[in-house]
Amino acid sequence: MLSKEIQLEVNKGAMLPLMEEFYTIQGEGFHTGTAAYFIRIGGCDVGCHWCDVKESWNAELHPPTSVDLIVNNAASSADTVVITGGEPLTWDMTLLTQELKNRNLKVHIETSGAYPLSGTWDWICLSPKKNKLPTQTVYDNAHELKVIIYNKHDFIFAEEQAELVNDKAILFLQPEWSKKEEMTPLIVDYVMNNPKWRVSLQTHKYLNIP
Picture (cartoon, rainbow, N blue to C red):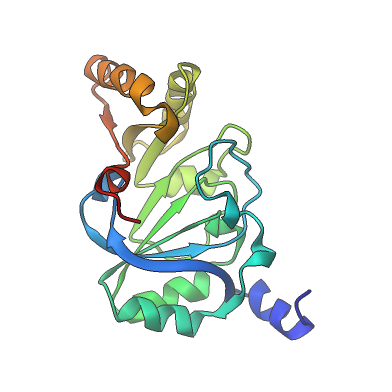
């Protein structure tokens, strides 16, 4: 149970439930292969059954950490920062992104879009989930739409989401890791027949890095 003072700081985004932070290579989507400092924020109620970081779901397991400390750690390592989760938009991202931008860092987010957009972003990767669809603010501002393909029906979902996102968003299909052998050939075939889409792979897992 958080003290009243800390809860107030969390509510305004001055402290955030930090799960982990690490410097690595971006493995997915448009910026694949580029160096980035990842900040993983705890807390998510979207509940994807194939989520590979389910330990991020319960925010109470991750200590509220001051934005100043998070930003200092990030600024010492990289010029690009990726905020991920969990679902980072569960929390107010305004102060975190302002402080990162004040350090002249490029700031990216990976989000399901399930909550309204907060914060100032150089790149928004929207990865929508069926059980809690994105808010309009994220559809309108996403730079990239990345749909995870777990089964054949997900191609239908992908097209539905492409109709809802803004027309400047770059479209990606990515196989869910446990189904990659089955789904990757289907994605390749689909993209060849529907070239508005691109293929995304979890290259960091092939490289055996975080």
